[in-house]
Image (cartoon, rainbow, N blue to C red; front, side, top):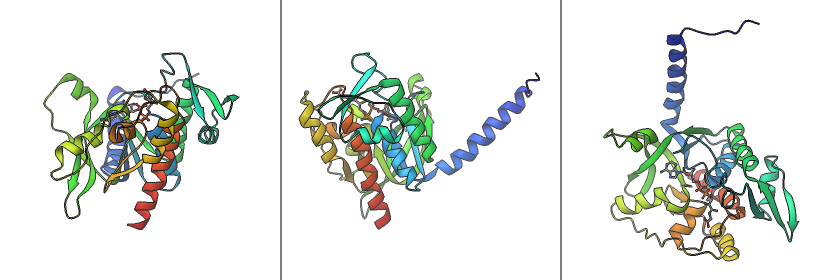
Length: 261
Ligand code: 48H
């Protein structure tokens, strides 16, 4: 068996050339999703399937957000109908436990949601953090984000970020709603007050997170746990139905808005 290889400089050249080709496309895209947790990956799959150019930035070098930790590191998550449909679409096995509730294996769920988003055409960039937004006035709107290598942030280096423009930005950053938080602080005259997530009330929260998913200001949308932080909703613990349904709902809302514009 002959194992083909290359001199080191050729490997470097191929990586840089191909990554830069991608980055030129990424610099202006239809939709930016921030966070590769359950809501972000679900939104990415539906929007890419509809033919939009979707870029998903994830701070970590791995997918899944809170899925991988299951419930207190027990490797299972729970979800209720109709969110089971979303996992069936990506081929994730589910075990019914009665009353429309299912249990899934955390590692399988995160792997299949990620592969579903990528197969649908979403571009996932790991190790990149979103730390600010681009805004325009008249009318007031968000038109993209500021990005930085997570490694640069962790090292605390003073390195200017770069900017990526888009027609819509989805904050799927989880408990801290990082994108809406920065927009509420740094866009002049914007009237967003984050209410802050409340203590656990699973049944209520599962319903309300999906209902409140949507547009925050023109160009900026919120999905998943970030919805609870923005609208002061209770948390729900390791039940993930609303995260998946919120991802699907934000995709429907963004699609409608972009088609009407
Ligand atoms: C780039 C970022 C940034 C940033 C964060 O936390 P997640 O899993 O988010 P959701 O909302 O899809 O799912 C929430 C769920 O996991 C959960 O925590 C639940 C149900 N909790 C209930 C409870 O009661 O506790 O994923 C968010 C992802 C993570 O991978 C972050 O690393 C990433 O977003 N992220 N990526 N730039 N500024 N901020």
